[in-house]
Picture 1 (cartoon, rainbow, N blue to C red):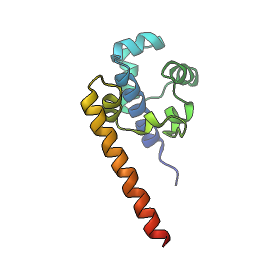
Picture 2: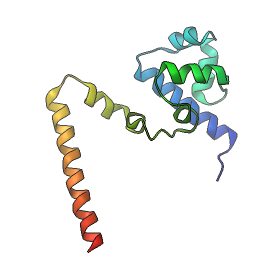
Picture 3: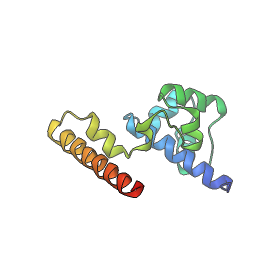
Length: 122
């Protein structure tokens, strides 16, 4: 089912906001980078306005994400975009204990999933 135009704008706005924040940028920084007003960036992030195609292409290059992710939220080649930002922060952090704990949980999940899949096949 196709989403309404407003929901599409809101989803794009959320991704723009997330990418901006993940990269430590303010709305002012992003507005300057895109040569537009802070008010326009605010409208984009709230889903009441859209960026031009040219600005979307620029953002996808700047943030190293695909246009498919930026516009549709789908990017199978970039797992980082599918993970919550706090998980990315842990993986990138210098806190080895916290990162190791997260990786241990992921390994445990992987073992549980394998066991579950094997039981379903039996």
